[in-house]
Length: 139
Length: 172
Image (cartoon, rainbow over the protein chains, first blue to last red):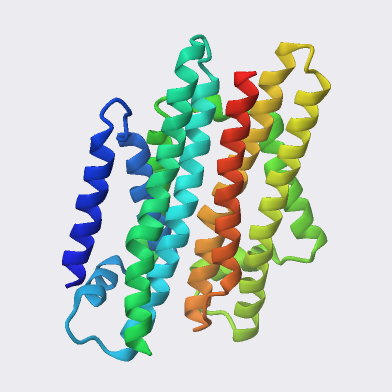
C-alpha cells in the first residue's frame, strides 16, 4: 500500500509539472546532487539505506526497527532540505557569473527555485509521510 | 562501516562538483573562504572545543562515554559556529554591496562573498558536521533533537528569501 501511495504522489506530481511545458522543470545536475548528496550524507551518518527501504515496505517489522526507520526518514528529510538549499545557491552563483542577457534572469532564478523544490519534494512528499507511518506503527 | 562513510563523503563531494557545471573556479573566493572557515575555527577554539577528539571520535571505537558526549556536544557547536560564519559572510557581503551601490563593480565581489560564504556554511554545518554528530549520537544511542529539523527549515527559508531578494535586486 505504501508503494502505491508513493507512485500516486510521483505520478500526480509529474502530471502537474508536465502541464506547463514552457518551463523547464528538469535539471539533471541539480537532481543528481539532491539525490546523491542526500544519500552521501545518510551514508556519512552511518545509516544503512537498504535496511531503511526494507523496513519501510516490510510487512511486519519489529518495533525497534520501526522507530529506527522513522528516525532515519526524519534525517533523510533534513538532508534533502539541506541539499536543496545548497544546490539552489550553486545555481544562483552560476547565474550571476553570466548576466549578459537580462531576459534570462527570470528563467534561471526559476531554475534555482525548482532545484530547491527537489529537496522540498523529497523531504515533504516522500520522507514525511513514510516517517509518520513508521512512527505511528512503532507507537 | 568506515568504508561506507568515506564512500558517502566522496559521493557527496562528487555530486557537489558535478552540480557546479564545470565552473569550479566561480566558487573559490578567498575572502569568503577565510571568513567561512577561520571564524568558526576561532570560535571553536575560543569555546573550548576539543578538535583532535572530534576527529578521533569519527574513526576510533576506543573512546570513553564521557569523551563521546563531549565529541557530540562539540560537533553540535561546530555546526552552529559554521552557520554564524555564513551569517558573518552575508552581513559583510551586504555591507560591501550597499556601500558601493553607485559603483557597479563593487556589487559582484559583495554578492560573491555573501553567496559563497553562505554556501560553505551550509555545506560544512549541515553537509558535514551534522552527519558526523548524528553518527556519534547513534553510537551513544541518543535521539535526534527537534532543533535540527527546525534549524534546517529556517536555513531553507533563508535561502529562498536570498534568491528572491537577488531577483528583485537585479530587476531594479
